[in-house]
Amino acid sequence: MNYNTEKNNKVYVYGEIVSEAEFSHEVYGEGFYEFYVKVMRLSGQADILPVTVSERIMTEDMKVGGTICALGQFRSYNKLEGGKSRLMLTVFIRELLDDQQSKNPNSIVLSGYICKPPVYRTTPFNREIADLLIAVNRSYNKSDYIPAIAWGRNARFVRNLAVGDKVALSGRIQSREYQKKQPDESFVTMTAYEVSISKLAAFDDESEFDIEQEFDLYSVPRSFEHNEQEQ
Image (cartoon, rainbow, N blue to C red; front, side):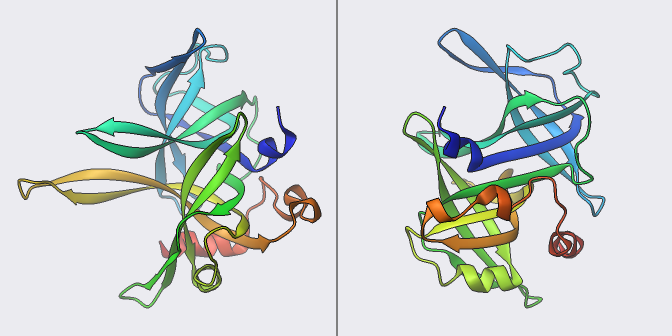
């Protein structure tokens, strides 16, 4: 396993299982299951996140009402729905932990490349926001495409980045419901998943940038707590 691809996508999650495990897919005879986990924010709100676990590490405690504490990666894949390809996201569990490691139950550290021009905007309350899509390399020449959202100073910084620029960031994975208009003019409620950025850096030379030194997976930045209170 490539060490760099282990460092550039790390997730820590601790929460309550809120759905039954359902079979997702199989790879070389190994089954993978998906369920949803409710992860509390520091503000008291909650995010409901999709989690994928191999049958090799599943336990009898992984049932509705149980808790899970784990390390993994935030991964993407394409799913065909209604003849169209849709980007799907999941927390891919790699290691189960016995004890909670941090006061922050939802933390992610990523590094990758800007793969679409960032979209900068302001809200009706004059909050600055920038949306970006990051390509994160994975082993076996694969990549995950992770949507992220930056706020305030980070948003102003992001709007000046170009496609191909290298970035590293930390934050949390959030779930967000929205209304999608259908061909018959009706609306359905959809859920989007994205990284809410608390800390961000751009760099040129990967050999001179130590992501593990610059970004602590278990830290709780003050700016992150401030963002949660305003969302």
